[in-house]
Image (cartoon, rainbow, N blue to C red):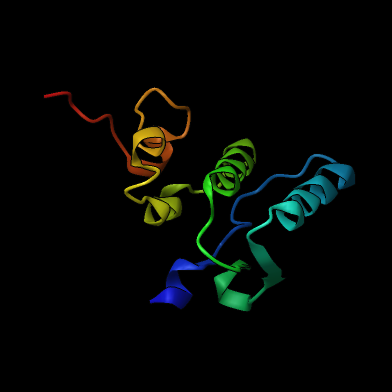
Length: 108
């Protein structure tokens, strides 16, 4: 289970780079996120990002920003929801909410 939560697959699916510098910026950003351990291609799994541990708040915000900017499928990041980050991560006003969780939550 720990392996699954710390692995992000298909981190390159449908990414459109408009210049070699854009592609370089993508990979450099991934490499600079503190929780990222490795980034490599693995055939059918596409680009696989392995994490050192569960992302902290800033790590997760960087992953969300990178994924949003490059048009990645963001549903895979829902697994990083915790009791500690739920308030900001599940905020339906945030730009990532629908991409990660699929729909707005109703207020009771």
